[in-house]
Image (cartoon, rainbow over all chains, first blue to last red; front, side, top):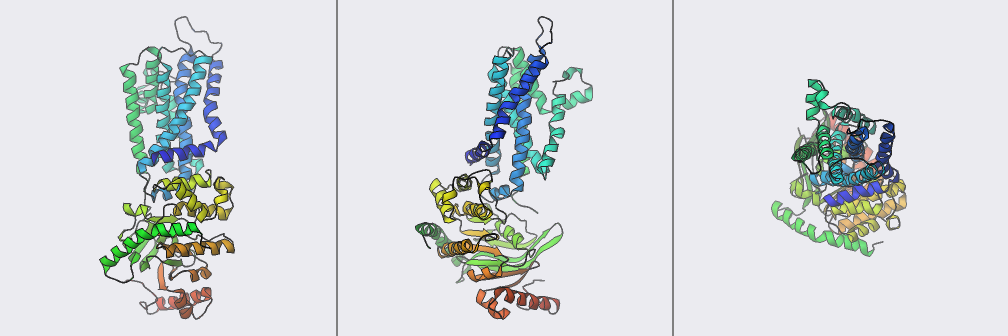
Length: 247
Length: 283
């Protein structure tokens, strides 16, 4: 039933060519914009280009944002159209539904980050020491995080309009505090503490490890593991929002 | 128009329901086995009392009509039977188990009033997906699609269908699981007379094959297709009777008029004496 759900979600997306195109192409285009933004920057020799730092983080942030949006809207539709209630009257297990969603959107996220990473690597010569395979891995974990948070947040929105409003609440603080704009060490204590518990922070740390080391470091695996733990935790929270009975 | 598919349908649900019939007959030692039993069923949603003490049984292998004006609690009652609506007081037993218990999810099909299907998927993909929840095969899906007369549209997106076709996709998604008990909330709304007649024939064939159907409607003329009727009004059960009894008690062959007569009579009874046979109100 997990696989059937994954196939169904992907089937729904497949009919929606425009969304597929947006998911796959937009991150690559934005990355292009970031590249040209820093085009005329001159960095002292020995220091990495800003693009190598910002572009790399973008590769992890895009799938998170996109999948959060796509999932929360899709799940909200499922709740409002009555299909969720109907599904829950069938023998489907809640885990089948949640993992089905997570798997479907991870596949999309993997495709998306393959495109974006390829563009960054081959067109813009993204310069990192580690393997781009790990970059894609972190991007996919981030995407699943977006899926999990989207599934969870959709329970608190009644309309698609409200669902979109969750983005400034859930996504923007993480982007601001993840270390993209200001290094975490330079933040005041309160912000640094908040930053330390936001999931996106761990993926940015992991990416820094990948950028700075040829081989995978234990710090990177630890960050990835923490991310995985958070994802599972949020999925469990999301499953609590799926109720078979209404009061 | 009983086609081979109908027979296949009827045949497959027959075996399981024979077992069910014998089981419940043994358990209760009564001649007529019931698929649904409700006792003193109360449902309140946010302090509004929607169902106020219902007692009734629904016979297995029959079509039971749930009739009443809109707002009388038909949908809430159906949701309580399916198990998606929390019961405030009383009990609902479905196929020998408490409503909503996990084993029933295989045996109870529920078609909501608004079609709950994925508008952005094809008819076939919808039916196959809901079928997958019950381990149904592609052949089962094709059978369910032709049972609602949508073979020609199987590959079309549900959103591109007409309103009547769209609601039949929802029905096919329930049929694919071969449920023993099928709960249908206003399945004929928005259908033309020809299709409505076809669907009622389909329901009759399923009942003949042993499936229990509970069908709600606010169109009284459809009552004649049912073998038993539950008349609901303001969360109270006015009566459980056959269409013939409805015509007799209401003093009219026009079932709509008969129903109105019974409502008026019942309202006077409720106001004055309480506890006549029409009003099944439990204190």
